[in-house]
Image 1: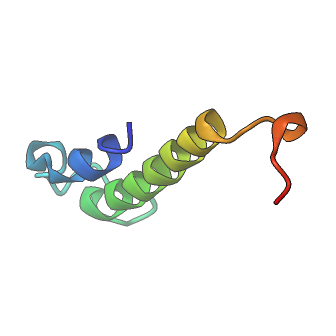
Image 2: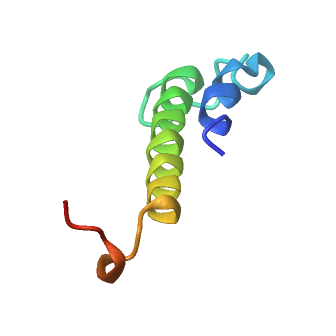
Length: 60
């Protein structure tokens, strides 16, 4: 699942354009920002799926 944020930015056909603009920024820049948000969301999701429930944590 963590491969998704690594592979999606490599798909050049997604951002090979100047338009549309968002708040004056070209498509490429705000799409790169959305890739960062995708990476954060995916990392949080994987962390929550793989972390132990609060009641079952081992105390070392």
